[in-house]
Image (cartoon, rainbow, N blue to C red; front, top):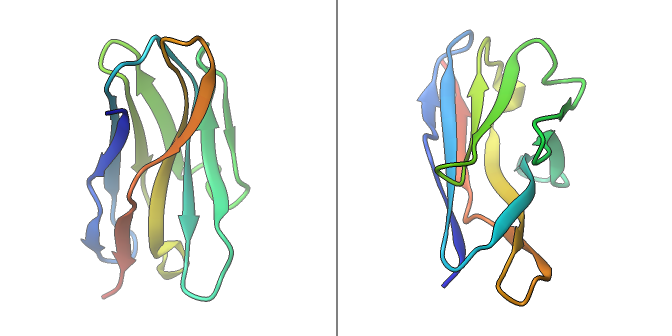
Amino acid sequence: QVQLVESGGGLVQPGGSLRLSCAASGNILSINAMGWYRQAPGKQREAVAVITSGGSTNYADSAKGRFTIARDNAKNTVYLQMHSLKPEDAAVYYCNAGLVQPDRYQYDYWGQGTQVTVSS
């Protein structure tokens, strides 16, 4: 069964840091773009950061300079290092990936979400 499993969320004080991880598992030939999205209560899900299979990155303006996305292709894992967290960063963070399966088609997968709470 192909799945994305996230970890690393939690409660952090304003100004603090967290690192989120998302590991893909199952029968996967390769992984194309991977990314992190977030959804706060009452708001639409929004993109935070994306990384291509070649390592090119793109960030939301709100994440630039504070968040870093990285991937370890050997581990099928994507990370989101977050620094200088603000209360407005609080949300459920979701991992997304384009996974190429044995039929050679890409399928879009989402993780279950991990809660990030920023509060003193």
